[in-house]
Length: 455
Ligand SMILES: *Cc1c(COP(=O)(O)O)cnc(C)c1O
Image (cartoon, rainbow, N blue to C red):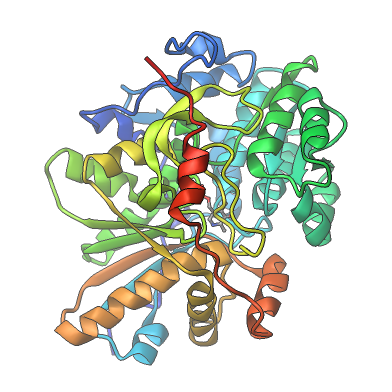
C-alpha cells in the first residue's frame, strides 16, 4: 500500500499562528488604491470611514511579512480547521494518470466555502473597534453566509445586500443568513441613493456585485457605528486566506512532497491568492519554482482578456480606484452564466504577480466545468461548488496531459467549497439546457472604454 494517506491532517497546534503577507516579498508592490476624486494614492487613514482601522492598516501593509492571528480568531479557526489536504487517489485511478493529485478542501463548514477564514477575522476587528455592525454585499451568497456566522459569533449586526437575481433564485441561502441574524436586502434596493439611481436607470435589473457593493458602502458610511467589509479582492482578504496556503504547505512538507503545479479558481482572487502565497513567497525569494495556474470562466475572463489598468471597484463608482486586470466596472457576465466568479476585476496582488510572470491564467467554458464537477463528484464523493469546479476542470486536464507524457507531476488544487446551494445550475446542466456564452471582443472593448482615464 501507498504510504501517503488519503487525508493529510495537521493537528490543531499546527494551524498557523500568523498570516503570511506576500506583499512583503514582492519587489514590485501592488499598485496603491487611488482616491477617485483626486487621483491621489490613499493612506490608511483615508479608508477609516469605510473600513475598520486595523483592516485599513492591513490593506496598506506592504512591509510586514507575518501578521499574528489574534487568539480569538484562532479559537474560532479551531472549530473547523485545519482543513484536510486530500490525495485524490480515486480520481487519479479513474483518469488512469501517473500524476499525483491533491486538493485542499475548504467546504467543511456551514458557509460551505473558504470565505469564513476572512469573515471571522474581519468581524473580530470590527468588534474590537467597538462597532455596532457591518454591511456587505453578496452574490451567490457564500460570503454573506460566512459573514453572518462570524458576526453572530461576535454579537454584531450584519446587513447584507444580495444581488437581486441570487436573492430570488437562492432563497435557502438567504434563509441561512437570516438564521444567523443577518438582514438581507435584494440589490439594487430603494434603501440607498445609489440603489434608487440604478433602479431608475435600469428598471427591472437583476443587479450585479458591483452595484451591491456601492449600496453596502453607502449603507456603512451613512449609519453611525457601521463599517463595510468585503469578502474577496482586497489585500486584507488575501492576507487572511494565506491560512489555506500555509496549511497546504505544512501538510505537503509533512509527507515530503513538493508541489509542481498549483491550480485555483479566480473570481476576485482570494482563495487563489491565499493558496499560493507561501509558494509564491518562495518564488519571489528565489528559493523554489512552481507552476501556478489561475482558472476563470470564459464568460468573465478578467486575466485572459481584460486590461491591467486603474478601474472602479464598483458600478456606482463610490469606491477607490484599483489597478487590476479588469473587464470594466460595467461588465456583466451573460445571464446564462451560472458558475459564479462573476466579478469584473481581480486582486491587485494577483494582477501584479500575473503581470510579472509568476503565474499563468486560463479560461474554461461552464459546460466543461460542470462536466468536470460531476466527474469529480462521482469518484471523490464531494459535491463541489461550481466556482471550485473551474480548478477541478484544469486539474483533470493537466493530469490527462501527464498521462500522455508519463510524468508523475504533483498537482495541487484548491477545492474552495460545496455546491449544495447551486443545484439549480446543476439541474440546468443535467437537463442539457446550459449553454456557454463567451463575450465578444466588442463587448469587452465597450465596457473597458469606460475605465477612468488617468494622467
Ligand atoms: C467566493 C468563492 C470563490 C471565488 O472567490 P475568490 O475570492 O476568487 O476566491 C470560489 N469558490 C467559492 C466556493 C466561493 O464561495
